[in-house]
Length: 478
Ligand SMILES: NC(=O)C1=CN([C@@H]2O[C@H](COP(=O)(O)OP(=O)(O)OC[C@H]3O[C@@H](n4cnc5c(N)ncnc54)[C@H](OP(=O)(O)O)[C@@H]3O)[C@@H](O)[C@H]2O)C=CC1
Ligand SMILES: O=C1O[C@H](COP(=O)(O)O)[C@@H](O)[C@H](O)[C@H]1O
Image (cartoon, rainbow, N blue to C red; front, top):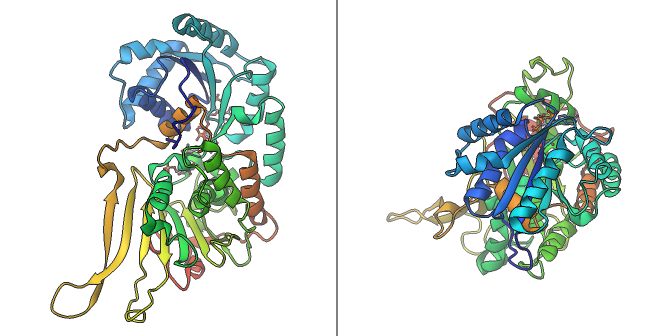
């Protein structure tokens, strides 16, 4: 949830149109998040959800599906499900500029109902939980069928698959929508652990004073996953780990870590500007020195993968941030599928101390922010080993964010949907920010892209990736 309390307020009523309503993302993340927003009292009093997808379902069948999805999710079915169920509508049809399917009719009915109930025109929030190939056609359809005016539109990531395709998509979308109607989502920015970075840094001199090259040797942003890709092989063959995760989520998290202090943390524009300004200081990647790609053994045997596929399922990169604060400090980003563990962590590896112990300590101090789940902060510190002798031990001091008094962690999609409802764009990306990200990433999509190296499923990826972290090591494992 954003830091803003300012002029952003909930509308009296809203209709959320969920494109791709029968898909994986909608079922696992978006529908449970909409329910979470409702259960936490963060939804306008009057609301409807209209699912939109090609499948010819009737409305009751769609409601049954939503019920199943919620039953399977962590949040479960709403306590007032009997009231909520009829608020869910379904518009079948492959929505596009030539054929809008049932959406205009259903949306018209719902808008009229909401206007009667609330006494004012509802906000329309279109949520595009569809693959990027579908963005352009849906955006054009919104324009062609008069559904764009006054609406807000949430686009999933990745918004474009290269600098060129980003520019072309952006131009097509801007034919229909103004920038302030566009909410490009990157759900990693909605994670509690990622949002806590501001406060950790700007509310605590202990951390704020260390947050630069004067104290930090390297920054690691590590997102190993033990997940397989067999259930998404079509998406994966077209995308790969670097495009799926590095230029999107991990670059955004790097921006969150590296940004200069915003002038005002409660002003969404100033937070957004600070994060996106630093993205422009990302030096374009050097694929010959600073990138290791990998592919797990057995990937090519998955039904749907090309027998000679060169797609990466692992990517480790050394990113340089050319600002005065971070000059010479490598940002090491790593992610991959079928790795040893599933977790998400930022580690600031601190320089060795000055003084009498300078040469005696072999484990660096660390500031660690775990951003999976509800988030956790860990400090890797050295203490005297309790006992009669003078020797040293490294240990971890841990603060779990869900233990913070009064804290009620919110899931990333619920947090970002709420921000879209109140019109707060601080945790969404702008065209300038994505342009900067794709520019820094572009060399990895050119002729110098390295071939992926093989790695064993359940491992930490190709050994070659160790080189990038030297003189330290990948703190989570290698
Ligand atoms: N799945 C995940 O874990 C995550 C996914 N994402 C992002 O969310 C987006 C959707 O992902 P996901 O749900 O996994 O994808 P799916 O392959 O499940 O697609 C979602 C829905 O999009 C519709 N669709 C598919 N292709 C087209 C097309 N060419 N034109 C129009 N509609 C189409 C389909 O519905 P219909 O019946 O209408 O054709 C489908 O059910 C992607 O951009 C992905 O990067 C982001 C975070 C996590
Ligand atoms: O966008 C994506 O994110 C997931 C990881 O999301 P999380 O909610 O588990 O943090 C990743 O597995 C997937 O490949 C990618 O498309």
